[in-house]
Image (cartoon, rainbow, N blue to C red):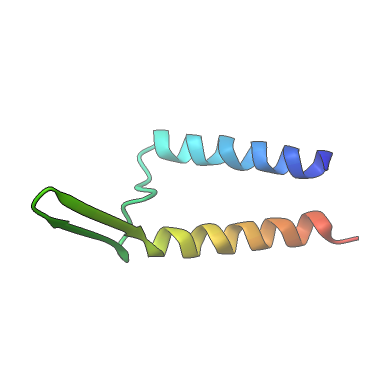
Length: 65
């Protein structure tokens, strides 16, 4: 449990640094935004895929014995 908390903390720090450096996390090509009148819908497809890949690789290395 401790390793998981450390990994999540490190991931948040890395994401924060990347956002501060100007990386457009959440505004990638493949993220869909639909605006009609006073309704808006945002679906971050590309961002979700990238986050999933990064977390999968991170968990693979953390759980490997």
